Image (tube, rainbow, N blue to C red; front, side, top):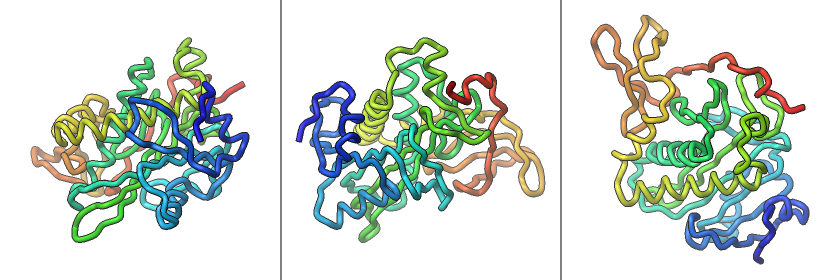
Length: 278
């Protein structure tokens, strides 16, 4: 099945796209197929199920709504209609210890893509997209490991578009409208930018390694030199390592914190009008 409509995602949802289709896009993973159900528990879970049924990577799932969306470390991701809920299944040959690279390359690629559309996205350690200090989206990676090698991975992405958001969140659609950004007008546009960003991140990683990916991640890093409160004392955020660890300076000593060790929180919104649609 081939979708040629400009708004192919809405067209797929109208038919409850339960069969994969392809789009001829040179900036996406070669051979990528897409499945677009109106409702699923989780796009990550759906792709693992399809893999067991014999579907082959690369395969993307984009749901109109999720009933059991998941964030990192088991946190719930609210998934009402209006948001982008997208996951991609990839065949890999990656050392298991390099699993954190998947978050870094995905976050950098998506942020880079949005920046090219004049969206001033930043990255909140380790896996969140920020806009005006509020949570715009998040990334959740899952892997299948055999003999200390990641053979298959699912990279899940949730981005707020016009869906309801909590106090710490922000919607992208009203931001684009108020800023006059016409190149990003629909969820289909956002899905295309996200898939292109994931592709770019993976290709850059394959060709140049984690060094340039980390450097790009730090270009968008929101917390450089931020003072944070650790359990016993304060520290100053210095950087992020190639394994996605946070580097904090405490009394002139570097401390390395693994993902999930602390939460960096969110800022207050710069413009309340960006938080809700009319």
